[in-house]
Image 1 (cartoon, helix red, strand yellow):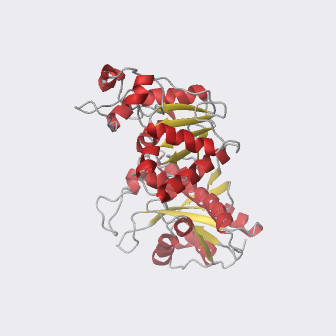
Image 2 (cartoon, helix red, strand yellow):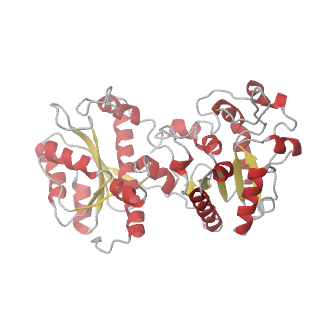
Image 3 (tube, one colour):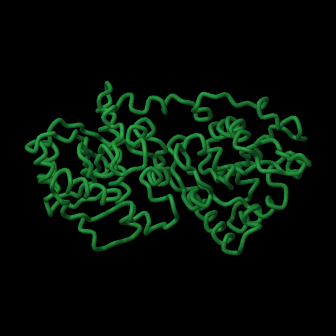
Length: 410
């Protein structure tokens, strides 16, 4: 849909907020021996390692990974068949050495990383790596901090994922920083080596390019019902509503979408008349149509309270399956899964402010109707809703393969 991602498509990857960050405003270059350290390595296998910042040894020699932690990374890569300097290119989130008031190494600030990000982005665009290894929190922040609009969290949340980032067209692999591994228990090193093995395995894996779904915005439910009558397929469906809970007077389901396969989704405003809603109610009541959703208790509650119909034949909840596959906190949300599985980092920032209620009360009203009343707002909402359903469908297929549940009826 033209215009749906306009702001995101036109904003700078390095300065999405429009602010200017520069070496002059950062100032680290004034106090180091090798300012603006250049990328180092022969890049034979297309691996770009992004570390934190040069330490004293690196600053003296003018090359990355020259100190104790660098030797650990070099040794570990060698065990996995990778030469740190022959097979990789190396850069840092901050390319001048940060020091404290006593002249010792220190962790760079987020502002210093923001100032240096343009150099990192330029390196990615110039060399086009097959895989980017983010070693530690500073590296994570330089790649995601300006693009991830939600709670970024730390490396513990992100490690272990090999992300097909659609903006950079490369695999993004966050791992622990070797200095953390050096200080940690044996279990930390075991996890670190396991994550680095995944990096090696993915080098020759074709990049997973995201295929845009077909979204059909319909005025009545006839096309959807006809499609389902001719195809015995499951659906993944999603609601956009006036709040989190359906119980307060005046709450309503504003629109719905139903993905009938991984590439096709129907989206529609929920009819106001009972007669208009009946075809959708019939779909919910049909025991032969398998249903999937992200956190299905939400769609179940709204269907029961506002449509008077319980959903028959629930077969998959992508949120619950995400928790089964990985029980770390903050990883089960659809937006997080959309990024780590498909590389889609932001399809909701224009819509999400309208879906947030002014307070945390479950029965309070959000601002969704303000969006609907804007020119083009209804189409934007329907498109966003459809993306939710498509991503749920695609996510469910991945999860079913991973869980290998032979009892899934399709």
